[in-house]
Amino acid sequence: MLRSTFQLIDGIGPERESDLWADGVTTWDQLAAAQPQHGEILERADQQLADGNARYFQDILGSRECWRLYADFQRDTAFLDIETTGLSPENSYVTMVGILDYAGFTAFVRGDNLDELPEALLKYSLFVSFNGASFDMPFLDKEFGRASTGGEDSLFARAAHLDLRYPLQRLGFRGGLKKIEQATDLGRPGELSGLSGYDAVRLWKMANDGEPEALTTLIRYNAEDVASLPGLTEMMVDEMAYGTPLSSTIPPAFPEYDTGVLPFDTSLVKYLTRSARHRY
Image 1 (tube, rainbow, N blue to C red):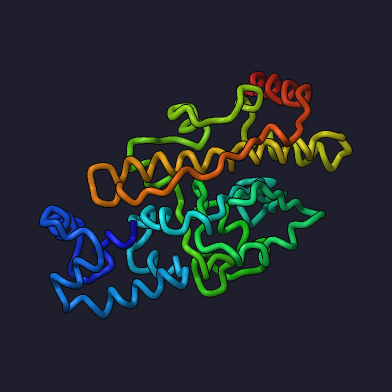
Image 2 (tube, rainbow, N blue to C red):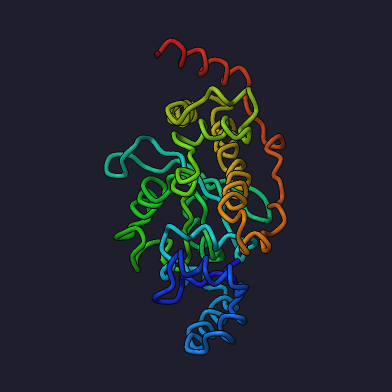
């Protein structure tokens, strides 16, 4: 998809790019042949793509067009979601992080293996989250003593970050992740659909208070969040690329992860769901 993207060149915006496509210029090679003055930057881009440097393209294209990176970096993508004890990194902390990649799902849990997360993140070129720019990334940078999200000190400075919230908004999908899951029929099974972020906080407290299955239920809840992200990403990319040369380079679907292999306590979920009804 990036090899059909021309907006990385100064002076080529969305309209000029569309005009070039309409004229039959749809790849970097064709653009270099038609307009040799762009040859140097296209050679540099080709080398950066070969080197797996997704951040290079995000820095040039900006977050608005970052969705175009997914097709080329799918195999080096980590879908990421965190759970915390509250809404602000200033007075709350990370309880666990779920990562889904080609190898499957991994839970990084506070008090167990959360300290292994920074090293684990180094192997990825692209992170995909929902609302991660405002929530997940600042929390994780604070957790690991990093100065600023997106800056040189950030955990994510070496990779690109696609926050699904914004391209999905461009497609007309508003609200939180669960609302969009329901609207697109890409959501979690019914047993867990009634849980919320507040319940994730409660599950962590229950686990620390000795509730036997609270932690496994929290991990399963998080895994359901993460498992919906590939489908939402690919639906979004399909819609964004529709009717353009970009659509010819959409990759095969990301391997589906069966969250059913992860246990959870049905009675605990029912208890939390009933409690939620009484809160409103």
